[in-house]
Amino acid sequence: MPRRLIYVDVNVLYYFFTAHPQFGEGSRELLKRHQGSLATSALSAWLLYVLIRREEVVDALRNIAVLLPLDAEILAKALRLEKPREFEDRIHLATMQSYGIDTILSNDSDFDNVGVVRIAPKPR
Image (cartoon, rainbow, N blue to C red; front, side, top):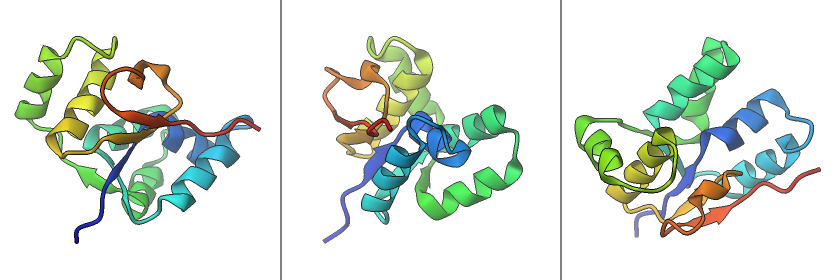
C-alpha cells in the first residue's frame, strides 16, 4: 500500500532550518515524527531560498520531503480557490488537492476550515 503523504508548509520548514526560538523544536519534532511521509511544493523550495538565502537549504529539503511540481494546472486551481486568503497558501492547498493530501503541518491558521487537517508545531 502506498504511503499517505502529509504536506509540510513553508513556515514549519523555515522554523526548522533557522532553529526558530519559539517553534524550531516543535517543527523538528513534527518533521521527525512524519519522516518518510512528507511532501511539499517546489514553491516551498524557492520560498525557503528567498527567506534564508542559503542554497544548501534547498538541497537539504529534498532529504526531508518529496518535492511536488508547481505547474499551470495547480496555478489555475489556486486562482479558482476563494480560501485561504493569500495566493501562496492557495497554491499550497491546490497542490494538496491535486495530490490527494488532506493533512498539513503548518502554523498558519488560514488552513483551518478549508477541508484539510492542520497540525501545528508546539511552541517552546
